[in-house]
Length: 398
Image (cartoon, rainbow, N blue to C red; front, side, top):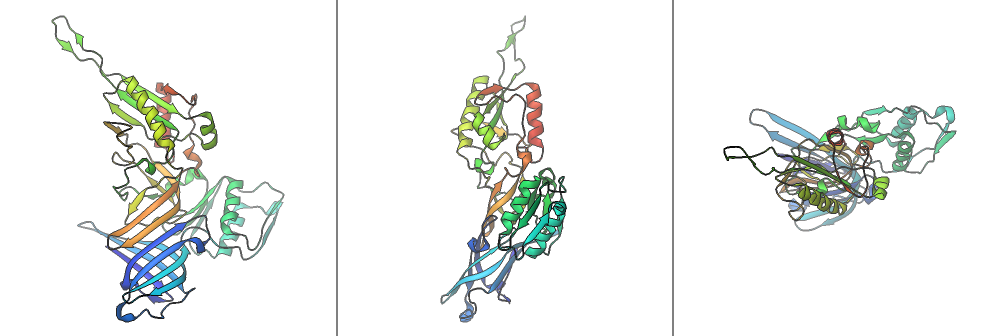
């Protein structure tokens, strides 16, 4: 069961919700985030009820009945203000703006730090306090002190740029998880706090966009030798040899984007030439993908700026038949990234969130393998294959 809880100007209008659609981004002011709400106008009760700048907040409770147990989970969706109201005979339409997870808005005070005062924990806490953050906070970075002569954050500058500036100086990342806890931590610690999307991915997203752009593609196949004739004339099938090839992007791609691995493709009955051809085809295919991954999930609302993880299982992310036939992806792969945009719709058909997930922000997405030869299809040695598996099975490694 999916139940919204929405308040506008202190009025709980949850029971009148017809539909809600919110398009939220992490790197824009809250005024640029668009929220559309439709309420059923029973007894004309919404005439003159709301005006621009009225506060608005929304959360969604999802209850799952698992036969013997019941699981209930509340997702905070957005907070913001009414921008426009249009009341019709049977429907009240509200346009609003707001945010959840991102840090939009401007600093209220100026913060000046000398060289001795550039403690990372202190600066992050000052920014959060200025923002008015009331949730839990975790600050855990290898860099404890910023090696500069001094820093200044001007009043009126926005929080997004302030946190990004700290992120660049410390090598850390910041995000908000589903429990409304703020994290400013090193990238290699992010996966343990990620929201797991497995089990919620919509089956309509069978496209490589769930994986995003990749520039290293591994194809592993096998094909039998010709039968061996034994002395009495019987044909004995021989053992199938393995063919392992990897297509690597150009040197310019690797320098600009890092080494980003696609999930390996396993092909039964494919010879060496077929493996090479599939690797070339998939390389072209992934070139057309966007930098961000685009999973679609149901019955959950991962906040903007939260870290998520998911496994593209065999039925997810498989490219079109024009690239590859009779193939499957291996199961040992995890994609970890930060939600930079979420378009969520709640109506009579259910709760659906279309996400854009940035994997480039996590340094663990860039896993180097020795002796990678740019712009070629190369045969993988046993040692290369071992390193590839390690890269793909580590959080964010793919």
